[in-house]
Picture 1 (spheres, helix red, strand yellow):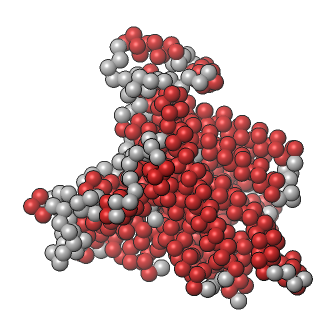
Picture 2 (picture 1 turned 90 degrees about the vertical axis):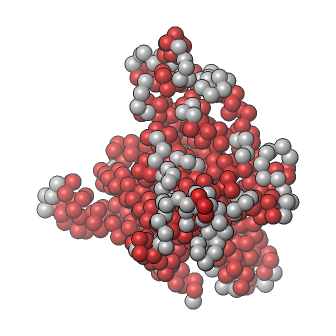
Length: 262
Length: 306
């Protein structure tokens, strides 16, 4: 919780916290080791790494949240419609999801980027699509259980249309657990987006995206390891924060875990 | 059991057909003329026309798909734009390397993750358990490519113990294998621990203990076997993730595998190779999933197709 809040605050107040302009090159100060002047050193163009990491938190968090949003927006109607109508619709949708699941997530993201072309926005779409099958399945299972409840039956008895019942009664009730799960998935979305950046398929230089920074810095691994070390640590800490938050939420919401603790 | 196997085989076949449709659609979703995308940029008009005929690109979509599948079944994945070699050959050269890497990673992950998970579960909330679980969580949160670079920094640059590029000897396999393995070890440790903890609370474990069995026998003979079922699924899923992770690790260690081939091909817009690599990755992943599901049926006889 603390790490995630810190990351979010850093992202919001980046211009106030960052000591230097993240894009301003200064070739006279290139590849400097950490010092009081540059706390985390400088990169191959003499840019302040701390400032770039601070601004990078905006990009990485946005990447994580937006791609989870895209995955959710795509997965929600598919899972909900499949579960509600059942039969042929469910069969077709779920087999389509099965096919998407035949691709490891990062591979699916790479496939999408190879179609759309590299770039920050395309990386968001790619990571979002790679998460879509997961949400479709999750939403399907939640909607399946809510579908049988009494208030849905009551709405049906009142003569409400299917689409009204589904999107006005069922989906709002299903959204709670799904939002919790989505929060946890921000971690893996950030990792995937950074991976695309590292491969050169995500955000493009000079954007201070953490994965891209790592990829540019690896050339100088022998002479200036700090250029790769710190952006990686930033990714690790942020993802760890989201994972810890997720574990906490899951433990708090799962009564079995409480029993085990006792 | 027979029906379950048949059902799973049918499902896999369906997914495989789906994969070919997706890969087929891929090149058609890229803006531009597919024939020109499949040819190199200096190709003559005649060469492009030749490609158009070979792949039936002037025919209706359904026919195009059938030609595509027909070529696939004959092992014809087209020719690489970059090297002019058959894509099937390029992949055949590299796939064993990727497989070697993924298997090495998996073995490391299962050994480290499994042992850590079992010991943690038998001594819950002990120092070992706490340390192991914190490390596991860090493992889950670490970007593979960064861990790889840090390994190179420590073991190749600073200590000079191990090579960081190449794939000739077993020594070359250590760092990339370890990078892949450590990441998956975290997830396997967590799953093994929680599954073991749950199993250890079952009544039959209490019974086994009440009979006066030694603790080791209770854990290895009674608990482990039952706790293994969800672990097998996670290991299967992780194998797929490792296969995906090879793309990153191969890039970091310049490992001559399929992942690197695919990423390089994206930069050179070598679409026939991208198609081929995606097809092989997804097929391998589906077959692994099939294997895991079948294994699952053997481990837990209660699982039946309904």
